[in-house]
Image (tube, rainbow, N blue to C red; front, side, top):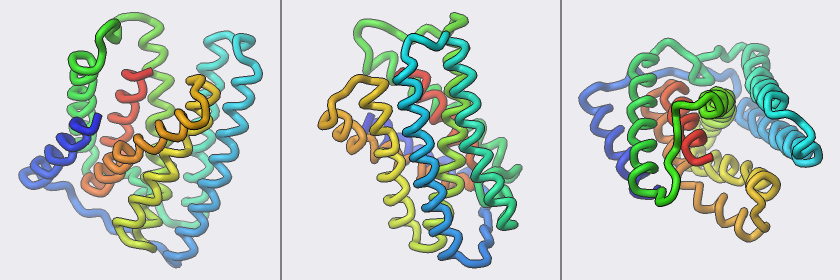
Length: 240
């Protein structure tokens, strides 16, 4: 995974040099207020996610597969809707979430390209027993489900939270804080869904920080949420 992350960063540097992305100017009336508000919203959404995970864990094997799919879609749409409503209320514009036509085509191509590389990398180098089948109904449904997850998490964390932290604290601190919070946001998932004990779940979150930083870097370079969201979707779908 570390090799893929390093390769991705280098590849994006090369691509951005020959096919530059348009810069995006984010305007905030009060940078500090907007950043602190985004932090509070993130905390609220983390609590909501924990409640969502506990509900799914409690009703484990009692909810049919299609029910889990619908619940997941609804939940991640809800998380995204909350930050969109906050941004619109503050009159900051959807572009301040990375939702913009600017760099859209380049970002889409980049996300698909990086996702394809990861899929091939995972299939060839990281699996020894079983490969990912992409030609089944279950696989398609799973992919659609992860689209909700990938786009929601990128909009909430990289589009909403990271952009505002960077505006307030600078690029390094903004990216690092976002990466750490995003990585440990998955701690309950590791414990309740993946059956890890706390030490293993903690270490898993810790080792995912470089991957989270990579997503943050993609957002910084492309100024559009699309590339990171597509790649996020493909990675989640491939490894789960």
